[in-house]
Length: 382
Image (cartoon, rainbow, N blue to C red):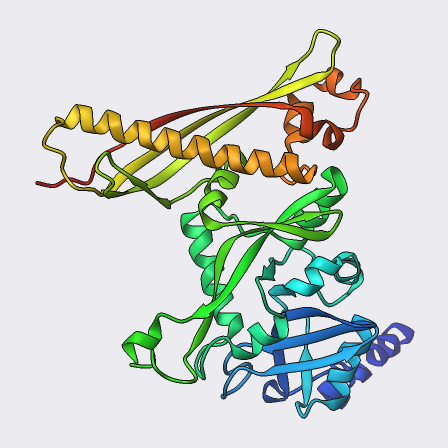
């Protein structure tokens, strides 16, 4: 009898309806799902911008909310208190955008908040927007049917499919800063959308704007210190062994443009040690495969000679861009490429016995680059 009574008591809470079980229940129409978070520096605090996807949990344009405070939590609370929305849902934030001024001031406080927040995943992509604040970019990008969240989701999908997932996550950045004192974030460029031409908006006072990838932002000790443009970003991807499909434009002997499309590549970092066991230099060996997308015929060369010439152009261009990136690392004296990790993996004992920190050695290191190119085909169907 006691067992039967105990069983009945266990089921009593369920007899009163769902409200006693799901105490935080909300109608779907009441919830606004936030997908993008923007962070900007203001004197004495932070400006927080939050954006939903177009339509969010119902119909309508993308929602964009902004608040300020001495801390991120305070700015978020201000948005909660002064928003006309029924309920804001933060656990589905998919992207973080840092304004340029905030990035130059330093992003330690933002990274610490992301790590401690129970509502934000640490593995989500993080970006720096060039030249403007995150608030401006998020408020002005897109149109009524597409906002910043959809645009960045499309960017990420395209990169994952064609360029070996080079989007940088917050977790990866934190790890790189801790291990090497430097790191990279994908940079965004705020620019006019291509759709304006189709919609005859090119002369409009309010054209549609978009955000597109534009190389990398370089961080030293959690502060933005330089940018790597889209051309030299190809070298970064090759050095990090994630080069995908990228167009490289070079000039032939007559100065005419030739478009070469990379299809993949890999690199190897080899340390050069002195007789006393100190790191003397770094040798970089890279291999690149590519196809010819656009070129004009040169009657003075046959197909074999033309192919060899195109390969030499490819090798020379890639070598130059790798040199540009490595020299930037030396100039800034920060290992944003994680070269120290490759050297330690190659020569663990010698690396541990180094007298100087690797970043301190960077400016004096000798750099040698060797590139081997491979032309798969020319796409010439004639």
